[in-house]
Image (cartoon, rainbow, N blue to C red):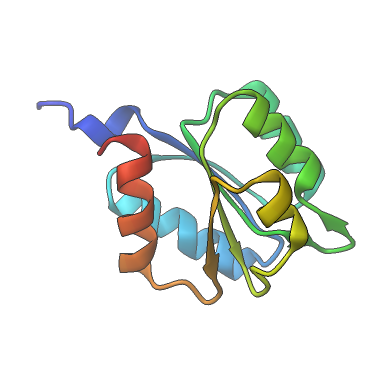
Length: 123
C-alpha cells in the first residue's frame, strides 16, 4: 500500500474539554494524519511535545486553570506551526507573540480545520 503524504504528519492536539479534544483528534485521523495525544492538560501537552516531534499543533488556549502559552512558546522555538482553537481568539498573546498562528473559533467546523491544517503541513 502506498504511503500518503499526510501519513508522516504528526498533529499534537491539546484541549481540556475531552469531547472536543477527541473530536479534533478523530477528524485529524480521518484525514490521514497521525495524532499525538490528545492532551487534556498543559502538563500532558508539554510532556507529549517533549517526547514527540509534532509537525503541527492544535491548541486550546484556556486549559482549566492554566493557559497554553508555555507550550506554544516551546513549539514556536521548534518552528512547529500552531493553530489555536479557542472560544476567545482575542488574546493579546496571539497578536503580540504568535502573529503567524491561526486562531479558529470554537466550535470549529471539521472542513475549516482541515483547510487550515493542510497548507501548514504541505498536504
